[in-house]
Length: 196
Image: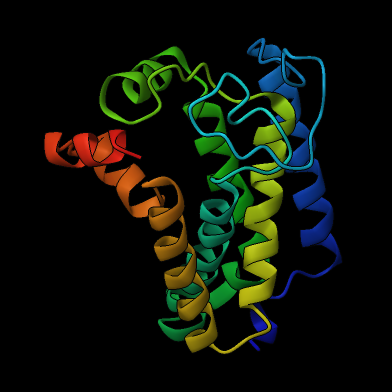
């Protein structure tokens, strides 16, 4: 456990404020608060559907949990191990991670990124996330971060590898493939994903 990276009261408050600010920004972007189907589901497991990325959890929730594991590792590396900036940001590692995750959620829901997903990934009909899904994704990152703070790094690595392998097997997509296809799309990968 890395006590220096666990959030203190002010960091928890900052995290809550950032979470609410993210909700306000998504609302200002006219993201739908919930699925346009009119329901909120705990789980939606059909990737190629209009309800993908619209509910509390889906096949991409493990990726956001893994974001938290990665964010914790980077915080530990930068501020605990390398003592960058004297290690002072370590106490604010969770709110910093929330800023990064929220920035991704906001950017992911811009027309440019939505169109990019449609062009090069298996998410051909992707219309962006509902607010509840984006906020749940931020929540999964927070959970991953807090879990990583309490378990050995080997366990975090094992969890991340398991989630990557399991989602690749289940839906032919995962965090690694998602990043690959967004930035360096490979037609062979796209065809393989389309066979799922």
